[in-house]
Length: 313
Image 1 (spheres, rainbow, N blue to C red):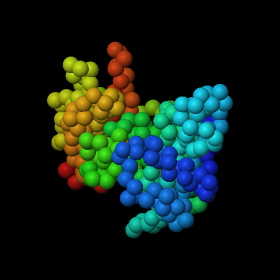
Image 2: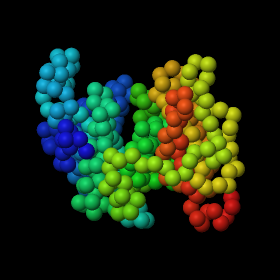
Image 3: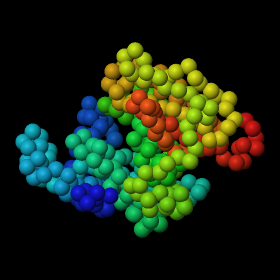
């Protein structure tokens, strides 16, 4: 957690309007739907035993840099939030949990580990308030989120939602024109896996199994325009564990150039995830690999649960 980021655990009334405005800025006003009643959204999360975290700049930019930012955009005047997280309280057959409904970081502060500061505070709050688990969804093809949530934080994925949001929130700058397929992540706060990952926060972890052509079920290749696309390798009858599913290293680049190509790649990866998760595989890690020529690859590791291996599906 960065000492240059202040994360507040309690939603101040004076900050509420700023959080609502920040959400609009993060997701793009063009795709923002007022029907979601954003003010009520955050208030309900806060007063119903959920959680709203807000992050503030405590030195990431110098006073001179912040003054210049404010001249370009008055939003940056004063002490306004640069990130937020909103969780609702919920329960199911396994008991109570928090559902992470919304999280965002101001575009000027991305890639400065604001999310890491917010999520480590989320963990501390869950321990303090005895919340046993937290669930949320994320796009499986955004590799940096997969690395954060699974590799660094110890979350596990057993479900994937096909076009999870359907017609809701699909016209914003991130989701416009592509299916909103989402991993459903389970973060078991009291598990040894999560506790050890959080205790080792910031330290890189190495996968114990080497990624090889023999244990991967697909491949991502580079097309004539330099964009990633799915290759001819596509195996849906693998019986081994663990296995690895490759995803694009830089989905953002594809989305900026050709969303039709991005959707074709998404369809292939989703089909593999749906197939193997339905057969008792669990997403347990995200692995980065670098070729001698410098090209980077990203793989999800899937392990099949013992009882499913006996069925030999």
